[in-house]
Image 1 (cartoon, rainbow, N blue to C red):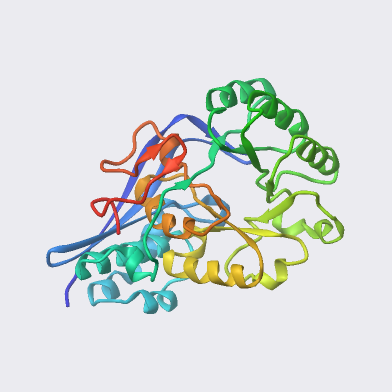
Image 2 (image 1 turned 135 degrees about the vertical axis):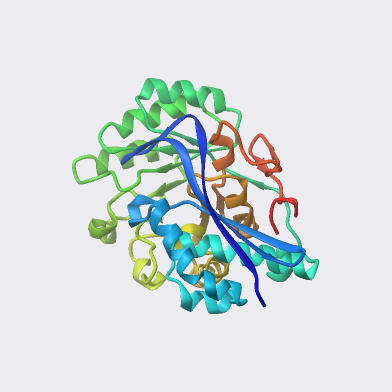
Length: 327
């Protein structure tokens, strides 16, 4: 076997920019792996994330190191031992899923043992900003059923009240990206409860979230940064009621499916989340979205231009991927 492997870095402009508590971005920078075996070709996309020490260069280097194994026919199961969890393995794993589906003439959902894929409702993200600016952006998106609000620490109580006033009927979930601390935790939590927020994602830094052990939250708290490779779900049980599964962190769809099953067995609620990428990155995650409690796969909606073909969105309704895209 002598499969062809290519690795490409690509950049996609973000419409209006994207801001969270620790960074502002103008472009989604991704790495695409393409594996070709005769007439069958599989693709996978990942988003390197500096929070985990990743860059375009480090991810490409990791993939280059396993390229000889891929050319020789490395399997998805063997990949789990050949590469560490992270963005690089995600791109390779998803490319192998796509290749396997194309070879077999079956959908990736069939290969995963799913009965079929149905449309899901995705959250739509409101970037962090001043309360006034966030209210203006929210008003434009107020018709969407589920909004994910990025927060940043002090002043989040004013931000979330402004968002709720602009979208009185939408379900709200918030993501603090580790930005809260003891100085603002109580006031921000109270404001979120006041306006009916359903889920709070990673309010405290992953290394200093001990105060959650003694806190009886009126709102489900979801682990994102606190859920990292090597961290067992059992160790999160006393602080979190939900986990955010991201393919780029898990290191691919293969591991994400395992994590989904483990989370269900441990009685966690599940969010399927994403880094800021294109439809090619979101497509494999739609399989996890079939049974997730919350779907946050709006990356393509935040770009000035997506791939073609891309995923089909009808406002916040996300449809299963066409095989021409992935799977």
